[in-house]
Length: 632
Image (cartoon, rainbow, N blue to C red; front, side, top):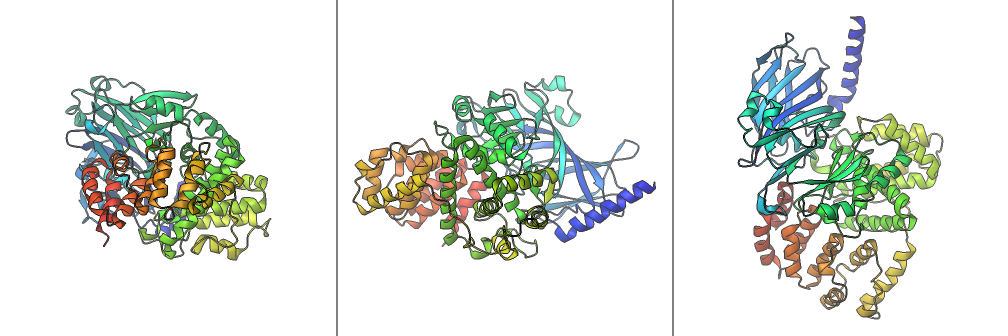
């Protein structure tokens, strides 16, 4: 009994340190009082109604013996009933209420507790408009035969399909049984217990899912490693699998599977390269799902099942640094996670740094140097469009608003630039030991910037104070812009390209003599970035006729060419329309619509095109583009 009291006192002390003083302002959950240890889902997918329905069962660890309310995050969920597990093993009904909805945070679900249960079960259904889920009609898929559904839970969209403590501060294991129509494959960010599911009857479904079982099958999953809620993921559709290595595979629609398997053939090499640098891969398998083009981002690092945009399929493996980035999250982000979104750079800045190291390991120092130079140049160029208060990696302000969290994207390159600066000054051998120690000592934990700074001082700067002063570290973390002390990468290959670009812009180097036939994608990206807003419509037309850029199979190239063309007044409406009707990645779609709207000659055309394209986009992309159209 004394041991239990001592343990509870310790947990309460930890909670007081991690709890309200550092609470996640985007979550209603009182995780200083109670934390979810495990989640069990039993859900049925209804493609007719565009809903998931069933129950979520939460196993709880109580930290405050006086707490008598469980507060969970929800968004548009229809809550049918709530049950508590009694000490006797029986379930009893519980009273609950939903707060008024908040436009950003959704609604708090407050469950009244006569005692502190070890388990709570919530029966519910999602809304057809759930922000995390995109339900696609057969006509939106490659075969046109079957519907498709996939999730995007980051940052706080998990609450729109599961009632839970939707904050990265809370990590939990989970299991699931998902019932879906026969002929469709279900995937989750977890281990599948059976690759080909038994029928619904064989699974002996619970009563609440029997009614939906006709013509359906159930799939079971289990995630043994604790994850934060934003890494919950599900996809259901007509999918095939190709094995890439002993612990890696790719899933995609049948018409895309061979191209995906070819593009991702180096995945196993990437895993080994990352392990050599930062320690063992701790998630058992690294599978990938190439989603339909409406997927709103480049990739989502769901453990065991990275979601990937098809826009990275170029036919020549030139864009696989995206896979290296998502794989890197297996250490930075998934293994060691930001505790709130204010500390987002701990996920993405670290991941950008690790990505470059993996790329260098596999493809050589020159490719890595070009990648870094392009990344840094794009970061510097982005400063003009990002408000100074959003240029810091993290703020000293109270963690109370989402406004400074993940906007702008500067935390990716700036965070990586800080780590590379530390590496360059401390030496690679010293810094590699330091960074691996960070991952090892904080594995499966959620952390804050203050914890990293403390670790940095104790494990690197105390022994090597010459590496970085407190004032410079402060500038990197808390000040806008890129510190003047930052070293800018300079690739000899890109320097030669710069001279050619300048001559071409000035008209002294004809387009026909531009030596671009052997350029790799990074060189084209650098070239197109540097002519944006400078080249004339006539020059872009010549460039297109010579190198077929508007119809390039590389989406990073075509996107940059379209952007320059819109600004210069070179009309590429036919290929651009095809692009915007087939690609939903925000990185491409939002800037292209913004450029079209800023060109008076294209504004009406853009409005008509968006009316046609909007239903094809994920809700996240729709929201981002809608904002562009609402600007004066």
